[in-house]
Length: 157
Image 1 (cartoon, one colour):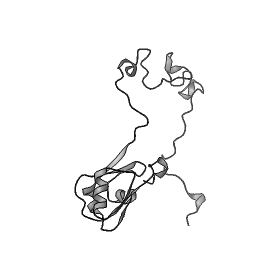
Image 2 (cartoon, rainbow, N blue to C red; image 1 turned 90 degrees about the vertical axis):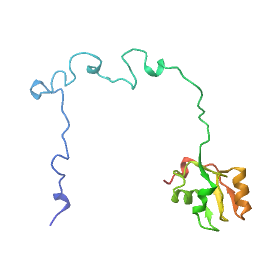
Image 3 (cartoon, rainbow, N blue to C red; image 1 turned 135 degrees about the vertical axis):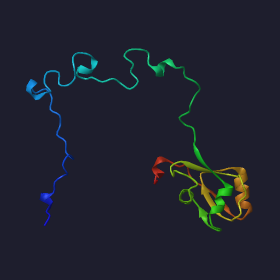
Image 4 (cartoon, rainbow, N blue to C red; image 1 turned 180 degrees about the horizontal axis):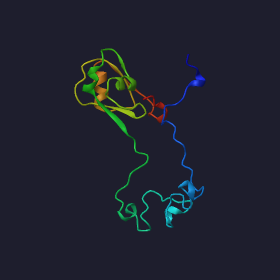
């Protein structure tokens, strides 16, 4: 009968740590596999990413262009025509849209656009709507509910 104290990991699964600096007989003595002199042989060695040996790094040589705002609002766009996949008289939420494959992420806000023709009366809950989308949804007897902006805490994907 197999017991917990008899279990062993497969051969080669556990590799012993390389012991360096323990004399010339060990094969890893003296310079401990770091070679002779130079930046990489010193303690505290290592260079930051993009370091080019003192030469002006590429990231600093190339001119900067334009401006990118940290506060830009990003939306996942869904057209009215794609909402026809939903059943009549249902409530469409971001979770429903994700299940239908119309959006990818729950923590990014959803905007409903007025492209295409909606053929069903549905209640749509989203973060933003275009004017034409609101008119089309309410014109068929549906409802529009605006949700608070999505955040990373909404992440369930």
